[in-house]
Length: 233
Length: 258
Image (cartoon, rainbow over all chains, first blue to last red; front, side, top):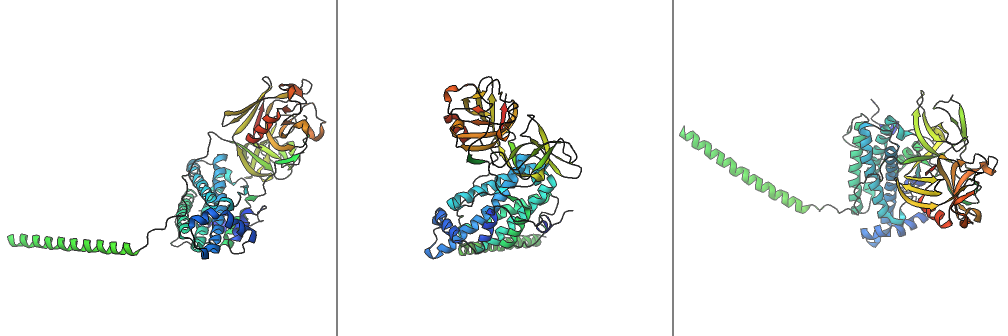
């Protein structure tokens, strides 16, 4: 039977991502926020901040909420891309195939909700190279378990840090959905869906380390440019 | 006997009274407790209803070439080499390949079948998955009809664009077969119009053409020649048409020339 501790054994450590989009965001949440990003987040996330109707004293803290939302968005990007590619590649079979369709649609809905809420402050979608994992049933399920456990632990780690109760309500609602996904993927991978009486949160550093270890974040290809063609004409 | 029955009935009645009293006091306590707890927080935003992927059937898949690699006849490191792939195109864009399938070798390595941008035309071969980059997916297909001198872009099997075209003159025939779009250049040359798509097709006769004699789909500074058999193998269309195609056709789109 595979290990119950997929976060420790499922993903190997390696080089950091090449374009840094997700990792930059993950690191930002801890407090070393760049001035430029904060300004952008505060202005770009004006709609969200307005909707939250936070008092003036809470302004800086609400910018932190925007940061945490971008952190969540980065993880949702990763999950949505993973399941969507698996569905499009069509290499999975049986119940895993159906699960991918359902969970992929949910993760895409999470992405859309965060993008809409963040507006111009939303981080860009990175490029992912899943290195063939979406084409191998066993590797796919093993990675899916790791990703879902990761998401659950990450939401748990950040939810108590949210200033806004309205955002906390969103985070808790998504957290329980991710926990269902985790149980579903664990069941499909033939490991106990709910083995623990108490789940630990993961810090930003721990999440960053795991995401980096996958090597799934890739430099985007450049297929367009200005230039004088040399086609046959 | 009668006394026993009466006693039993009294006992049942007393028990019922106690139960009613207990229930009503419990309800009251619960109501009191509810009133002391805050209402659930309203979420800042709601998650939209999950939606399945748009479009029917399997999309076409393409991927970038991550490192120089030999393309082999079979999913086997010992198989004959049929072509080689570079991470860059002659136009200095990221090289891409259209994916046709996948297979696992005996050692458990994943191999990908790709369409090769090389002569002879219409060759496919196998490369290790590790030599390739991120996957992308498209639902478009460009169909070039050499007889009708027209190009039609399909999305999800439905035509969304059609234009008259110029194709290769009899001495420089436009190759036929299955190809794909691998680059998009905002052209700096009036001869090619404002936009040029690079394809994986190559001229079978202009083999010494600079950069390999690749076939493009591009605009023109001689629109009066269209439609016609006027080019060196490239597919020309009016500038307004190529600009419209540029808005609709992503890199990686399969191209059928027939």
